[in-house]
Length: 238
Image (cartoon, rainbow, N blue to C red; front, side, top):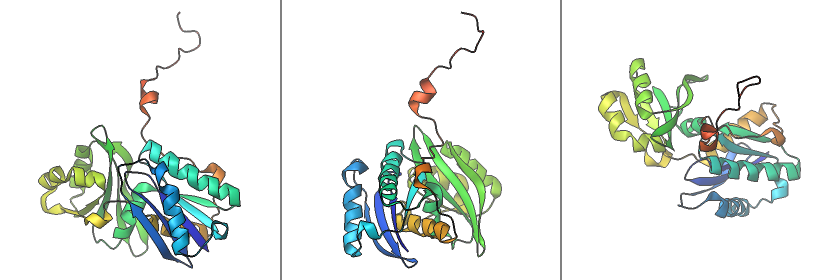
């Protein structure tokens, strides 16, 4: 099975091709530009390097969030368009889990923290084992202080990763001391190779997600939604 995976959920953008259960090619870019300008270039480069044509792709994977609202829409629209055109399945993958996936050999907790701006982060924490993983803190959007408090309450060593972990590194270290460690810079961003592995495993297990149902998972409401005033209920005084 040839699977093409894309991540555009945050500041970085990447594309990868998995074939016969292994990542065959991957391109990664972290530019201060909209992903719409180069996501197709990355996909084209991956396909060329792997000597594969778009018509030979059997399935697709993409991060579905949380993350940048615009970034998520770009990635999902790109993958959905290709999957529908070629009538192939497309699996959505959690951005937070894709970020933690390469660190699954860690003995302690792994906490993915993505900068959500507005002094908030998207975060989720896991405990990995030889049989799989357990979510110990459900995905949420909150202040970094709330995540630090929750991890401190566990009293277990925790490996932090992500742009949010880097942004609030000093606060995390100050509050948690030796309980906190940080993933190397190479793991600070989501890699499409990880998205490919997770999507591949899901589809190979028998799931064949319909791309028409692929939608972003924002977690946080948009500014427009938060600013919108509720409509008066029926019978309310005029």
